[in-house]
Image (cartoon, rainbow, N blue to C red):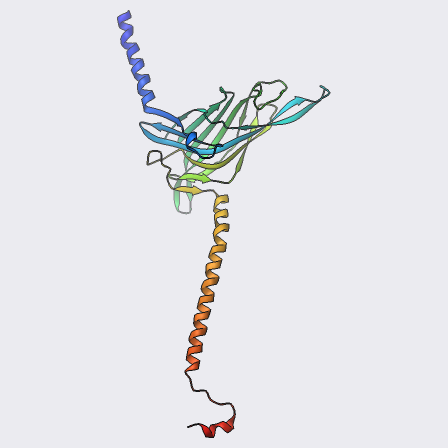
Length: 272
C-alpha cells in the first residue's frame, strides 16, 4: 500500500511544483518613489501577463453609537491600500483577475478584467475593461474602524461596471483621480474606491515587465491639451508676427526703390 501511495504523492508534489513554477506574483511597490502607489505583476510561464500600478484608498461609512448610546451616527473610515500587501492573480485570454489582501486579510480587493469585441465605424474591434470590483473589509479591525456597531466582515461590490475601457494591446494610463462606487452588504452603504496614478494592462503584454503603448484617460488628454494649447497659440502668434514683419520689410524695400512722383504739378518741370 505504501509503495502504491508513493508514486501518487510524488506526482502531486511534481504537479504542485510545476504550477508554482508556471505562475509567479510579485509586489514591486518598493520600487515606486510614491509611498502611496503600489505595483503588482503576475507572470505565467516566465512571461508577464498582468501589470498594475496605482494608488488606492477606500472611503467606508460605518455606524457608531452617539454619546447618548441611543442614536446611531455615521463615521467614515479612510482605508489606504498598504504596502507589503499579499497578492495573487489569474491570467486568461479574455478574463483576468487581481486579488490583493493586507493587514492579515482584514481587507481584500479583487479586480476583474474582461476583453471583448465591439462594433465600431471601422468594423469589429477588441477592447478590455475593468468589469467588476469587490472589496471585503472587517469593521472589527481597529486601525481604521473605531468602535463600530456590530463589527464584522462586509463585502462591497460594483454594479454594471465598465471602467478603464482601453483598446486591446494597449495599457490604460490615468494620473487624475477617479472614483468607483461600490454597494456594501452593511445596510447597502455606499463605499467609494479612489484610484489615481493608474497604469494597468491585464492582457496582451508583449515584453516582460514592460507596459505596451498607453491609452490615456479623457481627463489626462484634456489636461495635456490645456497644457500644450497656450504653447501652440504662442507659436502661432509668433509666426504671424514674423510673417507680418517680413511682408512689411519686403514692401518697404520695393517701394523705396521706385521713383517718387511728386503730388505738386509745379514740380513736374524739374523732372527729366
